[in-house]
Length: 338
Ligand SMILES: Cc1ncc(COP(=O)(O)O)c(C=O)c1O
View 1 (spheres, rainbow, N blue to C red):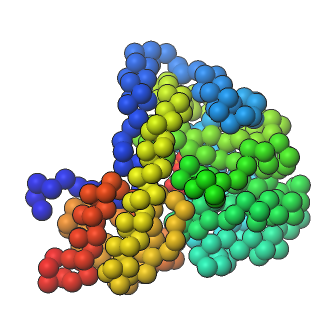
View 2 (view 1 turned 90 degrees about the vertical axis):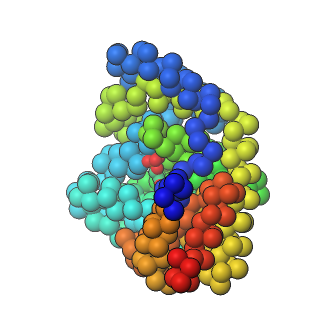
């Protein structure tokens, strides 16, 4: 194992590396980094505005979309008021609720995904924020646009829906829906997206929220003034324009996800259909398998914090990386070969 490089498949990053144009833009921007960054991120917000077809005032930038999630809890939820999310929801939702001293109701999942009917029923007069991830991490579950729209139509105006679309770029054309159009219609909808996944900039920490200007202004009022660094702003704007990188990332992910799913099945392991850049696989003794993979130089995510101790989450890698993971997994399941 000694000179084989470590393979990181634990954090749902883009295995293609940073888009070259973004790397170059960040390097150039480093030269001006003796000064504070543009606090309004004017260039990046203008680029996002043009790309998404929404007004720049409808966009708030975050240090990763994680910051948008926590800002939303602070902006919309007073201590003691309620936050609703789904079982197996992204771990930051619980942290955000805790930071805001909110009551947090976790609604039981259905088929490892959101039960929107039960979530709607959990929204009471004190509920101020509802987290919905589509696709969901770590389960990979996906809600169709029709289902989501029907839910939005039912949520009362006093509760903000935070639609977390961290993995939206990995949706197939048939799965896509017009959440930007919904933002124009629903004053209580905030969509969160990130440059950490399909755009390959996880280490630079750039995400954003899109909502009607009045809603976004409430987040901006709490946002630290210089929350995005100059190189990160420049890299994100450059990455946004690299359609070729996006198309390649989508195709690599689509094929790699299939490669993993088929490989897991060939090993007799159950995995869940995923709409993201990762697959959840039932490994049985997940802690043991995780440790064996780590000894073989491969890091995947354990899901004990999500109450899924038998499962692992494997991020989709490049084809040869997926093949290496599957070989190592076979060895982990048959320790004599480990
Ligand atoms: C569902 C979901 N939302 C948000 C994020 C936050 O990502 P970032 O803060 O890097 O934008 C992640 C990261 O794993 C995620 O899985």
